[in-house]
Image 1 (cartoon, helix red, strand yellow):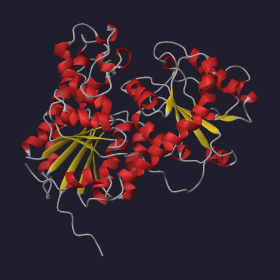
Image 2 (cartoon, helix red, strand yellow):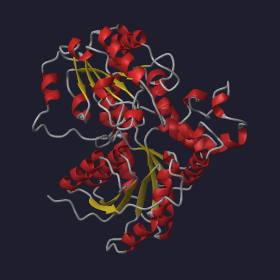
Image 3 (cartoon, helix red, strand yellow):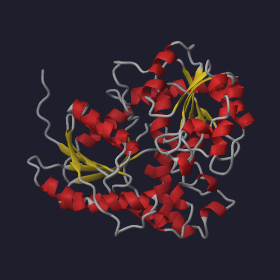
Image 4 (cartoon, one colour):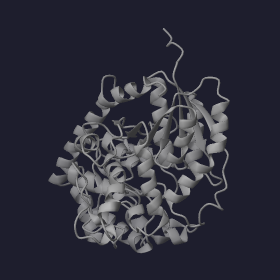
Amino acid sequence: MENPMPQTHAVIVSSPGVGHLVRDLELGNHLVVDHNLHVTFFVVVESHSSAGESELVESARTRKLLNLIELPPVDISSKVEPNARKFTRLTAIMREICPTLRSSISAMKLSPTALFVDIFGTPVLDVADEFHMLKYVFVSSAWPLALMLYAPVLDKEVDGEYVVRKEQLRLPGCMSVRPDDVVDPLLDRTKLEYRVFLQVGLEMRQSDGVLVNSWEDLDTTTLKAMREQEGYGSVPVYAVGPLIRPVKPSGSKSELLDWLDDQPVESVVYISFGSAGVLSAQQITELAWGLELSQQRFIWVLRPPSKDKGSNALDYLPDGFLERTQNLGRVVTQWAPQSEILGHISIGGFLSHCGWNSSLESILNGVPMIAWPLYAEQKMNATMLAEELGVAVRPKIAPTKGIIGREEIEMMVRKVMEGQDGKAMRARVKELKNSGGKALTEGGSSFNALSHLAKQRER
């Protein structure tokens, strides 16, 4: 029996970037498949969109679940400095797309009743007001959200720079934040990026709800605090995850996956720092030696240092490394199918930058982590994974503060892959895997949260 024609029309506007696009597309897919909404999905295109973004959009077009509309690139050269940081640049882009978005919504036959944006899309919420739509913001992880919602309070209460404080930043009802772990926009309170971050937090408070790519059992304490404690703006918070990139149906296999098929169960550590993460030349050398000393099997997605983007990444490996490790591992300098790799039975650990999408993929595949945060909210994610959830180890000093030596890298890899601590982390992450899987099935906490949102109508 066919489903009745969907009566509710929702609009999702996704800001540029692979990470946001993955989350936002999966939100749209679940609203259509599980909750019978009609979803128009606006992709905000940059003139230099990545291959990853293009691939995601084409894959979504093939599935035909969403009505995809690409908004043309906008010129923000007169609005922000050429070297503007991420929050400043992306919120400026989202502000500039408002006239085109407004025109597109006006032309729709079925009027939308709800608009969803990601963390950089809060300037678009004004368009929702004009069309009397409910307006929601969809973010990645819960603890950084708590910091963002509470930041206007900290701005008034705390003098001086956060990063030079000896005391931790107190968030009512949540784990406190070490000054070293604060998100990038809070590193310098004199910069425009800081003021933009505060503004986004204030705009979120004015929405009809904030959606988090997590689930109730994973972030119980933090979710409870944001809902019940003062200082977070009394905005409704919905845990709707874990929404991750689906594994592609097995078709033509890659050489990497063929190689994994020949390795023992849970014997390979996967190393990747996301689409934007790069290491220094010295750190690449130390990581290579650490892997070789550990004598563990590995797949390493290697990129050249940021200052040498056009160069051959393999040139930065120690002399003879590839020959000495040819029976142990594989080094990849192009794109690697991360979802398929992490889902493979041979993977036993993930050395990760702790982007939230990657962290969720690791958890949902039952893979413990070596936390190596580089930017954005990754330091907070790493602390949560290691200290709150117990599914990761992390180096003694932050990778952004200095070079992690080969001996410590060897120790961390062995700890996850061989030791008793690794077994305990593996057992814990498998518990969370089961919990996350249940959250999105019918009757689960995240399924119910999305069902509640799908039933909302105009204000």
